[in-house]
Length: 199
Image 1 (tube, one colour):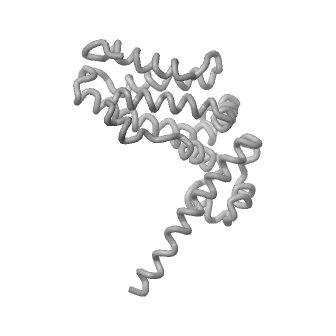
Image 2 (image 1 turned 120 degrees about the vertical axis):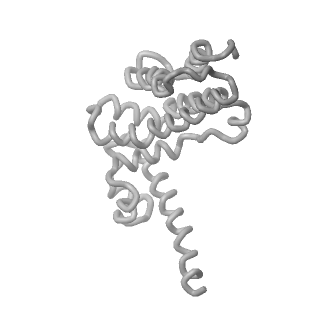
Image 3 (image 1 turned 90 degrees about the horizontal axis):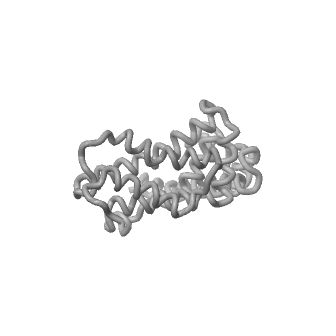
């Protein structure tokens, strides 16, 4: 009883520290870009020690990407009930809105300047892109199950075709990433792989 009573207070403090760290990283990104996101600055603003940050993240790039992931809305249960393709449409719209924010523009700028195998690029790939693809993979599987998409296609290629144009436009900056673009990607998927034309 004693030890279980002692364990309980530790959990809220850990959650509180994580929230404070990610909030600090987001604020620093918005204010000064990646250059402002140092472990020292995060620790100072979050009111934690650097070892607390290092327990969850290997470097400042990982913290910055974790802050971006944390800021990205997840697909809600109500959206999923509307159908997997509508949930995918919602996910892409939310990504577009995120990268149109100050935080998103800051991340896009630092990615454009980064080498493809730099720590920041790897962190973005591992922390953000892969998380979106995993959610997208589950939604495509669900769309096949409910009959919205044909089953005979390579799901990894389909994911490349969904997210590739989005991130290409993000990094090259040659076109906008509005709601209409997100919808066009999903509509193209439906036209190419759908069992019937659906809006």
